[in-house]
Length: 264
Image 1 (cartoon, rainbow, N blue to C red):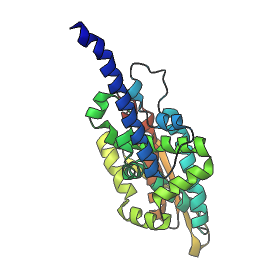
Image 2: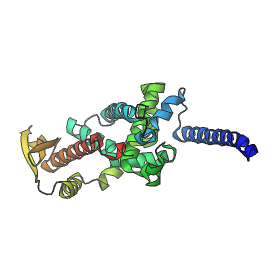
Image 3: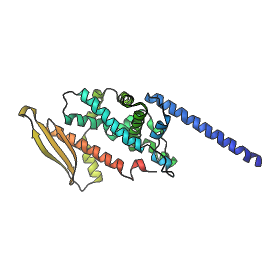
Image 4: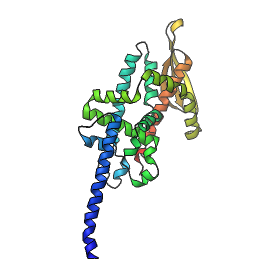
């Protein structure tokens, strides 16, 4: 019996080395898949670490700080690209297009396309509940990944990868906007989460000559204004306002302590 006890540390050490080798290979494969090789792999590891992974050692780093950074970097990349892509687009059009490409459900699908969920580090209970495939977790993960690439390789590297993953933005926007019904989605969310509140669209301003009118509309849920949009028609302005409201609600959900990203 004592002989086997002496051998036990040897087998445990071998198992640990095998696990580390498999994890290293998974990360190498992932870097090949995303088209970027990290000079500082610790940034990649942090970007892939869900808060639940260190549930008993919360002082250890997770991907929430990188997610905060990546959200801003993504917004800047999309703003610049759309600015050049639509030279005649007004502020309302540019803002709406950016909101479409930066909304949570779209980012989650982008994360699935690079199989991000397969390499996320999280607690065994979270993974058992398929937390690695949850949309809010994937959205946070891909924003953290963008933040990590920015710190590792700079803005050019981050821009190259984001636009590489998304492909032709003009074509992507055409496909996405056909399926995107912001007013309908906002109605569904409010009915499910705030059934007592009413959605109100209010015309704030109408400007420009008769042949080139610009409408500014706000949307409120209950007494809270959540979005403001502009458009060449009232319908377009309402859709832009609803898009902003959806983004605001998504951000509010992400910052809630009991939300998906902070669960164990």
